[in-house]
Amino acid sequence: MAVYLVEAVDTKGNKIKKLLNIEEDSLLSYLEFSHLTPIKIRQLPDFVKHLDFKISKKKIKRVHIIEILENLHLIVKSGIPLNVGIIDLAEDTQNPFLKDMLYEIAFKIQGGMLLSQAVEKYRQYFTDVVIALFKIGEETGNLDKTLKDAAEHLKRIDDIFSKTKQALLYPTIAVTAILSAIIFWVVYVFPKLTKLFKDLGIELPVITEYFLAVSQFVIDYGLIFITTLIIVIILIKVARERNTKFRLYTDKIILKIPVISPVLKNFYYAFFCEYLRFMIKVGLPINRALEILSSSIKNSVFKEAIKHTKSKIEEGYSLAQALKEEKIFPPLIIRMLSIGEQTGGLESQLEYISSYYYTKVDYTSQNIAKTIEPAIIMLVGIFLLVVIISILSPIYDLITKLTE
Image (cartoon, rainbow, N blue to C red):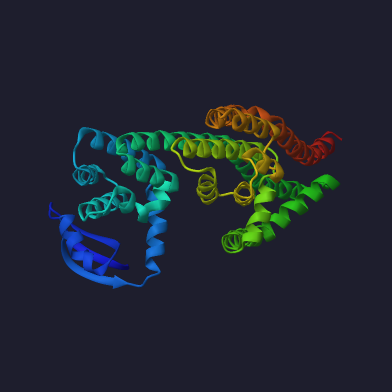
């Protein structure tokens, strides 16, 4: 495949530009299929495809894929040809990245591909689980049902993600607001007050002098500190992407951060059990389900634990025994899975565990403000106490001199 920059005219006479990652012999037929008349076509370097993917990934969200799956369920159920229905979806969408993706999927299906094959290029959006579902639906003739199941599964996953983000949002905003207020006082307000005191000939007390020294340090080196911090963050991000050991080490640290740690752990417990439950439900073997799950989960600690669990199961361990040896999952999950395996009710146990931890994430997202409020009040109180003492002491000295 190559990347092409295409200038073309659509059916409404609008001149458009777009990047296409497509085989050379399919380019013109695809443009004709998309009702585009090419004006200029230029092949670009291969690295552009990675940039284009990163941009489109931000523009195509999970909610878009859920909507597509729900519409595809209705299309298949109603008997409309799949490629025709997908073209209708493409023409109705306003998102240019989504429109291109749908047109390409419809183009491949019209050329003889199955849906599971046509979406293979967009595995990052549809996920391995959903594509596996497409294959099962095509083999069994129940594609409409599997499309509906896939939409419900992604809704559940999206809800878990949303609740987790909501839980982490308040601490982020609170810390940012407090730091901004402190910096404003230290950099702008306090130096002006101390200058006024010095102009009036007031001798500054020790605490005020210390606070002034801190203020001056921030003014002199604050920009250097911020620049250094940004560079360090970028280097850490690059190192996490390129070095698996470093990523594993930093993920372990993240899972130990107060307040954030319980939210993330509950999220991963719910995510793991929901994904595993769904894959078992659609008939995937546990070792294959764990393989897909390890590629879908982002935290390296959980990713490695799932890989080790898969290896142990292939050696003859039960799921509960294998997870227990990883020492990352709580006893509740181990006990529930053990009972599920013994009674043949593993799917229902996974559903219960997933719902339990999802509820915990939901509860945390609604009550996290109460959890961190005492720490915030204490931090603000200490800062205000230092500021008040630093400011009131000189004022008190000034009033004393005026009354003598």
